[in-house]
Image 1: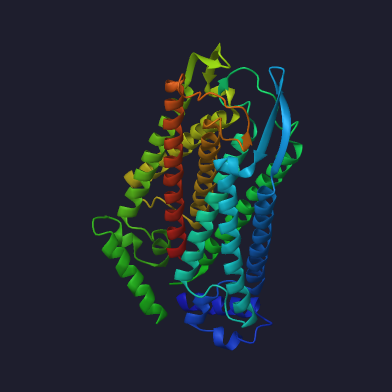
Image 2: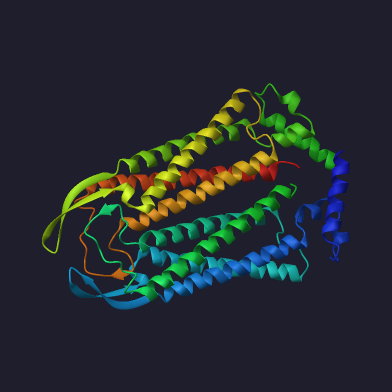
Length: 210
Length: 210
């Protein structure tokens, strides 16, 4: 029964990789354990990396350009107000996390593409899979917390404290608020893509043999 | 070589479960695949659930009791201010997520304990492991985003907009701010415990056989 299972697994690899020149090298216990994924999954992995890099760069650049000066009427006084992303810890956190995620995605993308071109498996070992999983997991938590923290501060009037009505700052600062909103949206998108990558690595780990 | 591997796996199970009465039932392919974990890991899983339930209940109760009235001086006027968790969307989100996480932890705890008492494996199948992993993963993202969103609104003066200096609301509302801070701390702790559970399920999935 065990031998039958091994035969089936080898057959599966052959079916998954009809175009690969390495099929003859891949049949057998060790190489089989190294490639529980087909090419399709590997290409999707690369696609996820590209998308994640794009979304984090968009989030980063949209936040960094968020800056505007205007005036607002408080208690009848016209007061000059200035808005900039670097005035808020949460927005600085978004910028920092986006930059790190973009760098991580670029690195993983370069590794994956170079291995795809050399026709070797994208994930070479269980240790590698665990490392990439840990990285994706940590960055997914970082991006979702950045997005949530930034969302939390966008509405000044909602702080759990019912104080005198402050003006809606997003009316005079339309461009600033738009930039922030775009950045937050793409930060959440990055998180989703990182979470998808993490799940892909779990699938890899659950399919690979010891 | 494959047969050798199977023998080794069976030997590992026997070593991991010296106290179990089920060793004779567990030797063999199917039962082996169902229990890649020793009792120690299963007890740790139960411990994680208990801790996660406690932390989310503390976060929930601390936030729900966050409520205070005081006065604050703005532009020389003494203004009455009222603070309550339900005035903020972020704090409402923390309460909602904590309640759901507490319920999820209790449910998983009951399932795990009843199985431990019946001496059957805590995780019965790969589908079950995937389900629990998905649940823990989603709740970990939810708790970290709730904690981050709540942290984002705690400091009113940091919104990316440099406006006229608002008073520090946490001075007159010390008790409110303390409650919120405790709640946020325990929300992040819940996230950490859920993430640890998720990793444990990935280890299970990566060790189990098809």
